[in-house]
Image (cartoon, rainbow, N blue to C red; front, top):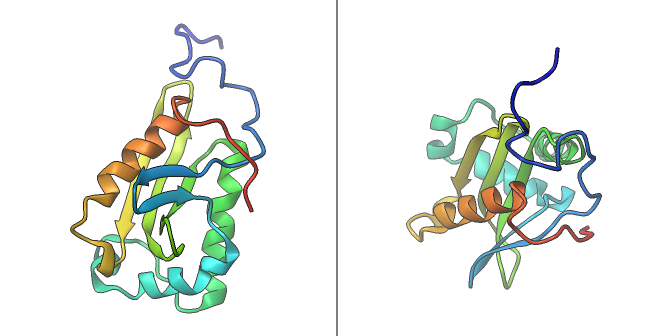
Length: 149
């Protein structure tokens, strides 16, 4: 059955996403970068936070479970089902939070937004700026993808 309207994200529907992942500047002190398996311990620690547990539907009781979540997040990039990012300190690469566009549907131009910050990063306004960086890049307004680890 044919569509009656053009794609909300022209030129992207049906084309594979570039293999590389961009690193997106958020603020002078933070960047969004692709998740790394070495982030698993920090992810497990973040899932222990009562505020994150209050709003989240999952938990990670071990580094292996956290690694599994990271692998799942990373698997959504090539298929354009999602864009999951680690929000990290720009200088020391410490985890500050997570920002994601999930359940992406490019033709309709929609996605679910997920975000959180670790307790030490709260109150700095990082998530709103990270969401703007993520949404702009996922819609094609951000930097061109470059290979990342």
